[in-house]
Image 1 (cartoon, rainbow, N blue to C red):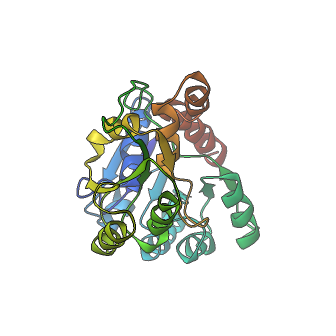
Image 2: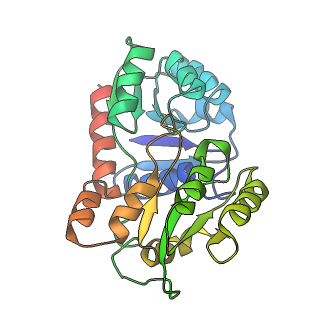
Length: 269
């Protein structure tokens, strides 16, 4: 099977969508011919006659890809990486052959937004080897609460700051990258918590396992419309005993890739 995954930001930034493309394509490549395309030439999509095309950047990319697949007979699958909102409404109104919701709540929302297409629930995955349990705490004598996410309004990191301000003997570490609210979050955190109880870190993806393992508590105060966050599954797999890890194992990328393959077989007949 020939599969194209489109992401104009691949290898340029490392966020949830880029991790999704990297992990999924790596596993699908074992049994299929997979092209990850960052420099997108839509004429090549005509010429190469893919069986499945997965656009990840939404809006016009999805609209144009849908027109191409109608003409070539390819199938278009859209994964709801944007979360419940206008981006994914446009994706749904483009009538993909399948829409993949990242949570059961998002699945209900998608089916109401466009009941005339096939919507299924397949979560993003977690790398069980990278985010493994290996306890390492910040050596500062206080409990550390960790929040992870881009520095944007949608992540609502100010709520984590407000919550920690109500607790004794705790500090807040915010780890992330990207977004336009970084300085605003720094100023607010220092004002409310002070420099001894607040730390903001821009952390590369490959260093994140150490950060997860070093915290005592993980929190994710994002808006409920945000797509099911990879950070939740990574936190589950990083800590604290067998029960969270067993839950995380349900979301291994190997299992997620199998679900995608099953979906491909259903829509390609």
